[in-house]
Amino acid sequence: MLVAVHRNALEQARKLKPEIPLIGIDGIPLRDEIELELPLEPSKGENI
Image (tube, rainbow, N blue to C red; front, top):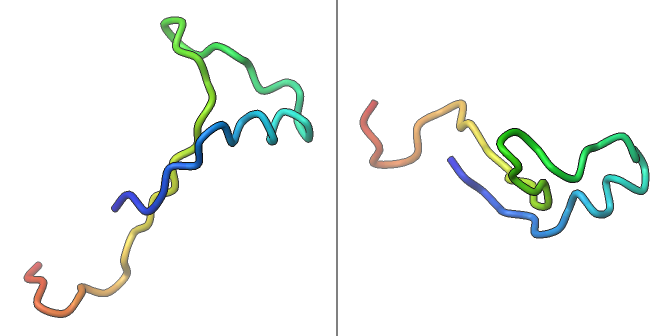
């Protein structure tokens, strides 16, 4: 489940770890971080 998108988070991360590249695979700029969550128990009303 997608919880949040942290825009421009890698700008701050590079201050602590400058070896994080500016450009990723296929020339895609690395700027944002996504926060994912895996629920350990089903939500109310959710059938698994």
